[in-house]
Amino acid sequence: MKRLSIRASLRRLSARRSRTPEQLEALPRLSALSALEYEGQAVAFLNAFWNKGPTFSESPDLCERVWIYFTTVVGIDDVDGKKGCQLNEVHAHRVFEQLGRTMTVKEMRKVMKDIDQDFNNHVSLIEFLLYEFDVDWLDLVNSPQGDDGDAKLLKDAQRKLEAAKA
Image (cartoon, rainbow, N blue to C red; front, side):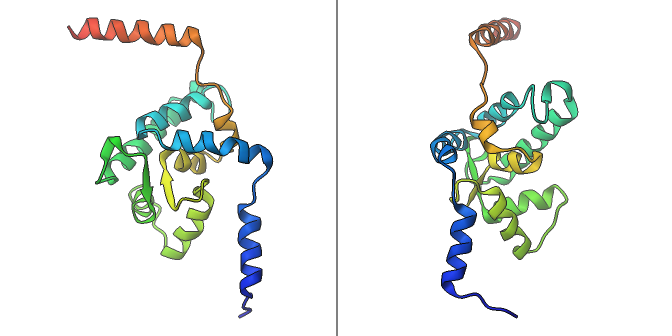
């Protein structure tokens, strides 16, 4: 078995983690999205890819998958539940197991390297969804999250919902 020197290992690691200037500029936006509670992350992901990428507007089944991932992550986050925003490696491993994708620790570590976009050794729901739907995180952070017309429609819908509840 060929052993790499420490210097070669570090070069491989830094090459994997190197970022373009555009990515460096966008990384704080990804971190901000990852810091939202799980529900906010799911909504941001659906909004970003509503009309492009997975195109959630045309596929209720894909929206259902996001809901399943959301509920699974919330159920596994035994510390923060719905108020949480990211899972450690052990909890992320449990998410994959609950979704029927059992893997060894070695395989999970490889997956973690692909999922963990901000290299904090935790997985947010956003990072998990990016991995699952195989979309670029730059597309996510550069996508609009609605406009003023959408905000008015949402307020109307919320007002009507509250009226219906009363």
